[in-house]
Amino acid sequence: MGTILLQNASIIDSQSPEKRDGHHVVIEDNKIKEVSDKPITTSIEQKIDLAGKTLIPGLIDAHVHVKATDINIGKLSDYPITYLTAGAGKLMKEMLMRGFTSVRDTGGADKGLADAVDEGLFIGPRLFVSGLSLTQTGGHGDFRSSTLSASPVTCACQLSTQPLGRIADGVDECRRAARDELRKGAHQIKIMAGGGVASPTDPIQNTQYSVDEIRAICEEAEAWNTYVCAHAYIPKAIIRAINNGVRTIEHGNLLDNESAKVMARNNAYLVPTNITYQALYKHGREFGFPQTSMDKLGDVLEVGLRAIEIANNNNVKIGHGSDLLGKCQTYQSDEFLLKAEVLGNYEAIRQATQVNAEILNMSDQLGVVKSGALADLVVIDGDPVADISLLTNQGQHMPAIMKNGVFFKHEL
Image 1 (cartoon, rainbow, N blue to C red):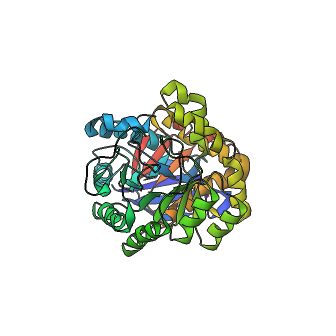
Image 2 (cartoon, rainbow, N blue to C red; image 1 turned 30 degrees about the horizontal axis):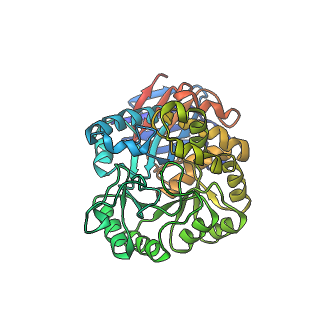
Image 3 (cartoon, rainbow, N blue to C red; image 1 turned 120 degrees about the vertical axis):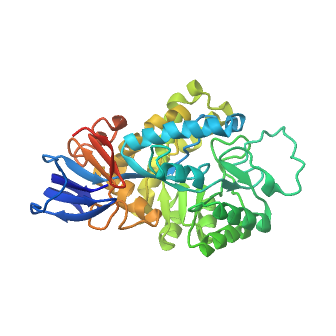
């Protein structure tokens, strides 16, 4: 890879809300070797003068589904896995070109896809995969219609209802399913702890998985030195999940003060994904989102930003996610606009860098511009703290994007 010197950068990262002008960054192989406010005069192969452009850490999206190539998740099982994988390749490249150098896939992507990206077979962000998400029968991950009879299998853990999830019922099946996903290379485990929008049969207001099942899954993740993230909207589902070992709550649109206090007390994270509801409201019918799911959108659409405010007021750590499906994936960066309405521009950036790096257990390696960190960097024309829209528009304000010390976009 060699050595690269980025000169005259204005750095924005979690170390300070103020831009650090006139800085110089040395990249050696895939790591940041040095960051200095003084000129670096040592002999370096490649020198690039950023001329005061902004340099930020590579962005991180903590809630994506790279195999969700169709907005109707229930239809994904109709596609050959090869087709979905090819579609994932396209989606991942587009994510990287928006400045997302790392993403956490919360259902569908596996170690094989992560390895393919690492080895250069696909161009895309660094993948932190959950394998197949775990759902109970009739839960958010069960996309069988209410008219479909139960399959004649001896164990529900044999059911994979579509390419994003698998059914596991009872403590033993849940343990087995969690162990199996970890065996196959999952970085973390994803469970469905309450009702959802995209699934056909479960109401938003229900809870899913017993406390014993949740605890068993969390025990297995803890045994592998990792954690569980849980889909949950309502306070009761959030509290049950957190009190039984879950570390991150996905969505959380109906969070209240009581559930927020439980999260804060347990050092848990909230990963809001408000852009997906906005995009579905605008384009769901046009792109083929099922009517049963459109009917449930109203329960979560208007309250999501209020949940972020409640979380922030209760000192809950807030990450950054998108959870977009199919053709709506192009809206990924617009989550910044929604976050900034509530928390301000700098905090929206910090959550997509430093906080998400914490969620991934990659603090000091990702989400920061400092010596020893991985060289995931994005150059921006302008100051995103002053104008958060510079992070949107499909990366058009990003003349350079580097992941792991390699330029994947270089228009400087």
